[in-house]
Image (cartoon, rainbow, N blue to C red; front, side, top):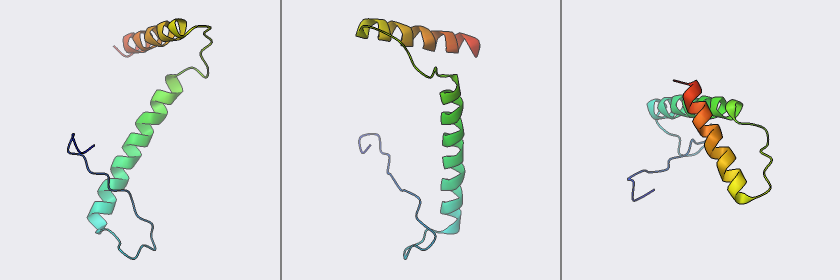
Length: 74
């Protein structure tokens, strides 16, 4: 993360002795909701399980699934 100049700043609990400023807390909460919503939408599109016997078969199924999802969203 340091190579990408990204700093991890987790949300703090309400009773923290070092609370964040309210505007920082609001921004972090709103971004968190967007990320969780996007993750949930992606998870809905994924199959519950992928049955494959070999590693190569698994790779092919995943690649074709990603291709099918990308075509669906065009």
